[in-house]
Amino acid sequence: MQAVEKKSLPKTGSSAKEKAIQFLFKYGAIALLAFIILYFSTISDAFFTYGNFTDILRSISIVTLLALGVTFTLVVDGFDLSVGSTMSLSTVVTASLMVWYEMPLWLVLLLPLLVGVLVGVINSFLIVVVGIPDLLATLSMMYIVAGLHRTYTEGYSIYNNMPLTSGGTAPGQLSDAFLWIGQGQMLGLPVPVWIMLVLVLASYIVLNHTRWGRILYMTGGNAEAATLSGVNVKKVKFTAYVVSGVFASMAGILFTARVGSGQIDAGAPLLMEAVAAVFVGYSVLGAGKPNALGTFFGAAVIGILLNGLTILNLPYYAFDIIKGGVLVAALAVTYIYAKNKFAKT
Image 1 (tube, one colour):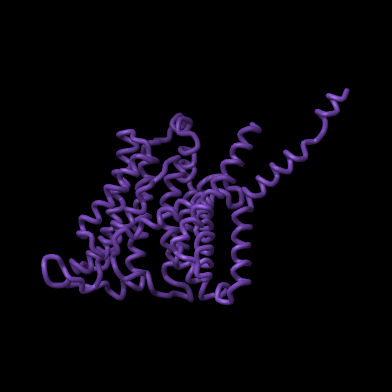
Image 2: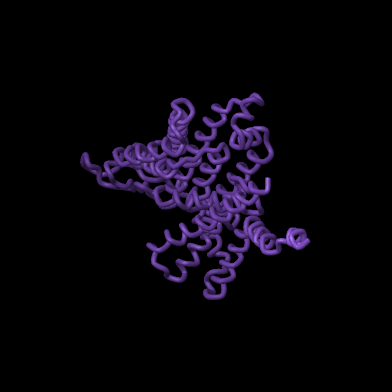
């Protein structure tokens, strides 16, 4: 009788734990963002202002583009570690086309995108055709592309009137029309913010409201079942990595227009932020999967946090600790929730 009574007792502790994990999974990122904004608003009058928030949006625009590329590869159960190097290559190629070769604006915008397509094609070939695991393939490409852009520039950043190793100075300059893409304003917001918002919205529509988006998620969820349903899984993964390369190239173009030069290794420090943004986005409103709106929200969380720490004059070299901590927290909540959900089934 006692044994029966023990079995019938409600597991209040376990239930409370599950509810807490579920709450953190669905609303943890939003609660973190609200806490960050509230905290920094109370300690600095300069934080909660229109100008500061537009600066934050401008600062996360490049990271968000990188993160959207990573999002598409994660949707198909892949992962692209080469986006930072691809962005760096795009950055120096973009600057060199104007500063070294004085090419017209349309070519300056088009050719770096083709560079991103090429990197995506090579990644896809290594992963889909050769069969190298995505992490190893894109890690290898990360080093190869990093070496390519350093070799291309001979280790120098590219800027207006720079001295050339062959003698003389560079003949061209970054045009005002090009710099407007990264530094201009439109309807009260920086142009990079508009570009970011348009691409986030386009990615959301593609992933959530198109047949191709459903195919991408189907491929990532169960590639074997997708194949049996008639989906060309190799083609889908191939496309996802090409899209990732294009997003990385767009980030490189935007970076060049924003800073007014082609800096080597521009994308390397942003890789970690992009990855963190994607995984923070997993838990936004309980999505439980890579998604465009969650990625944008994750980038915003990290951007607002770093902006507040800058206002507090925290040393820049400590920022990686914060970014790593946010990533670990997001991963912990996501995987604990997934583990509990799997255990129930």
